[in-house]
Length: 237
Image (cartoon, rainbow, N blue to C red):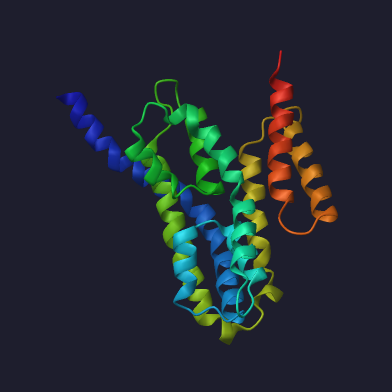
């Protein structure tokens, strides 16, 4: 009985811990959310459609790509194809979490993975690896991180769509740098030395080369798959 009580008390504590941990990343994402909302409004996307897009898709990279390709009328097949390419990295991210989620029922895992983005994935994975062997992956922590990011992203993209016409081109203030800055912070948190970072370098070189050589978002799966292949090759005995 005592163990069950401790478990019940730990659940909200883990969610709160994830919510608190998401705060610094959340603050960094707010400018990017405002920029996305303002860009969407400038392309003629209605203020109501912006939170629908960010709430149903919840993947910042593909949303920026979709807004960049938006025309009137929109080329829906092109936008859907580019969105699929940009979001294809989630296949690799999900595979990275699979060993930590096998013991959980799918009815819990699949709805939770709807909230998985680069930031929540990296933070939850780093937390699982840093926990004692008996601890492992904390779904409540993951949901705490993801929920904070989700509410902030949807809310501030909607605010950006409302304020965009009044603010004008807010990129001139450098807000568009917030998105890559958050990724650099995440990479720093996962740093384990130069040797372990070799797959990152391979992924960077391949993605940059493909970006320069081919139009569209082919650099996303190319960078992800090349990094994965490099990591697999290094891990072989």
